[in-house]
Image 1 (cartoon, rainbow, N blue to C red):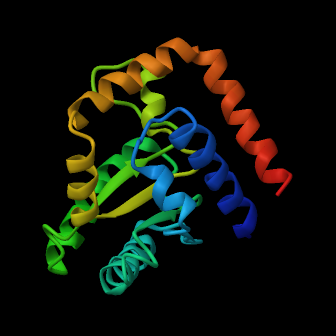
Image 2 (spheres, rainbow, N blue to C red; image 1 turned 45 degrees about the vertical axis):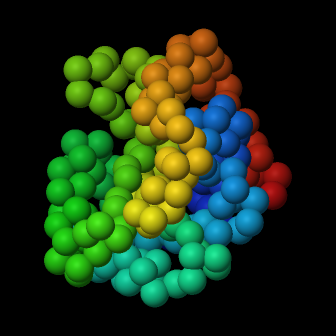
Length: 189
């Protein structure tokens, strides 16, 4: 499978701009996006073992990078773990890699997937969109950046509830329209 890396990154950037920042799903994302501190990486692997190698490489790269240059990494893998349950199972492998390489307490991995589904929700529940990205994506974060962001946002625990309310107000049709706009934005870049 040949991947159009530029198009994949463009659509993911559009999602970050329109959904993550535009809907304020993550109040910490705008600053790193504006400063160009998000590293966007497309992994062409179709097998989880190959993805794991890239994940480990990116963990090392992030840990060794100056946070002023790269604060966080979005590891986009459109050909691997396209089934959400497989993706969800892989998260334990990702967390184990963080531990194994000595990055516990330094880095962590968050998850986004086109079919993301929280436990005890219906697949079409719009609240699942808080973690839905155009492609399966592992978000590598610095713990120190999270700590600073949470300190600057005194009621960080309210973010999830606010996101659910935002998405319920947007509704399924509004979410679908936003996704379509992200595709159009990517095509026009």
